Length: 483
Image (cartoon, rainbow, N blue to C red):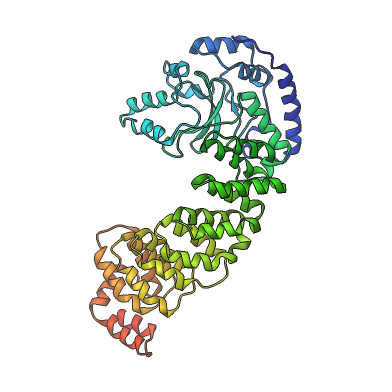
C-alpha cells in the first residue's frame, strides 16, 4: 500500500465535524437527518487490508486514512458514515448488493474521464444490450474502476475512481445512465479534500442557505479565483466551470462585475449566456441592456435572457414586457416560448392577445403551451374562436391542452367541438377523453355516451340557438337532455 501521512488533515476534519454538527444542530443540511453527523470509531487495518486483497484493488491512501479514522468495524455493518448527501457507505456496504464474483470490475480501468463529451457518453450508453445478464455485464463495464461511496437520492450517487490517471477523484453519477450526460467529476483532487470542502460549506452556511444547491457540483473559489479561472481557461468547459462557481456566491465587488460584463461582451453561446445569468444575479441594472439585446436575438439567446430574468431578476420582469411581447411574434422554439411565458407570469396583466398568436403556430408544442397559458388568463368571449380551433386541432396534445384550459367554462358554443372530440377519440383511452368528461360534467352530462345521445337527438342545437340569441338557459338544456 502507498504510505502517506494524512494525520494532520484527519485531525482537522475531526474538529470540523464537531463544529459542523453544532452549526447544523437542526439537521437542515440535505441528508443530515439520515446520518446525523455520526461516524465510527475506525475500521481495523487488518479488515481494510483483507477487503482490498479479496477484491484485487488498492484504495487511494487518503480514503484509507478516512476509513481507519471514521469507519465502522466489521464491513457487514449497514451504516453510513457522516458525509455529503446521505453519507459515505461503510466499506463494502454497496458491494453486498452485487452477486458474488462480479466485483472484478472494481480493478478494471475506468472508461470515464473529466470533461467527457456528451456525444461520447451517449455512444457508450447506446450500446447497452436489453437482455438482463448482458445488460448487467455492460453496466459493470461502464462502472469499471468506480467504487460507490454513497447515494444522493433517486438514482444519483457519488463514487471514487480506483484506477487510471484520475485515480482518487470523486465523481457524481446517475444509474439512469441516459438522465444527465456523462458522470461529473468533483473539482477536488482527492476524497479528503472533497470531504473537508463539505464540512467547510456547512460551517460557512453555504449548504444551509442554498437549498437548491447540490454539494460538489460547482467549482469552489472566491470571486478573484473564479475570474482568474475564466480568463485563463483553455477551453469552453473550463470557462463554464468557473462561471458556475458564482452560483454559490452572494455578492461580488465592482471589478468582478466589470469582468463578468466583459465575458458577456466577448464570448458567445453557452459561455455568454451563463455569464449573463451571473451578471444579472449580482446587478440586474448593469445586465439590462444585454438582456434586451439577447431578447431580440435568435431563439437560443432569447431563451437565455428569459431564463436569467426568471431565475434571478423576477422583480424586474415588467421592464421586459414590451420586448418579450414583440419577440414572441417570431419565436419558433417551444422551450424558448415556455421560458418567455414564465417571465410573463411574473407580470400583472392580461396577456391573452399575445398568447393567442401561439395557438395558431406551425409548431404543435407551441400551440399546446399557448392553450395551457390561456387557461391561466381571464376567459372572455373573444377567445372562443381560438379554443374552437384548438379543440379541432390535428394533434392530440393540443386538443388535450385546450380542454384543460377550458376548466370551469360553461360556454355552450363548445358543444359542437366537444361532440367532434367524442366521435374522434371514442376508441382512444386517453387524457383527451378524461378531460372531455370533466368539461361535460361541468355542464350537466354524466358521461360522454350520454352527451353524444343528447347531441344527436337535436336537443343541443335547439338550446344552442336560444343561447346565442340571448334567450339561452342552461337549465333548459339540462331539462331537454334529461328526457
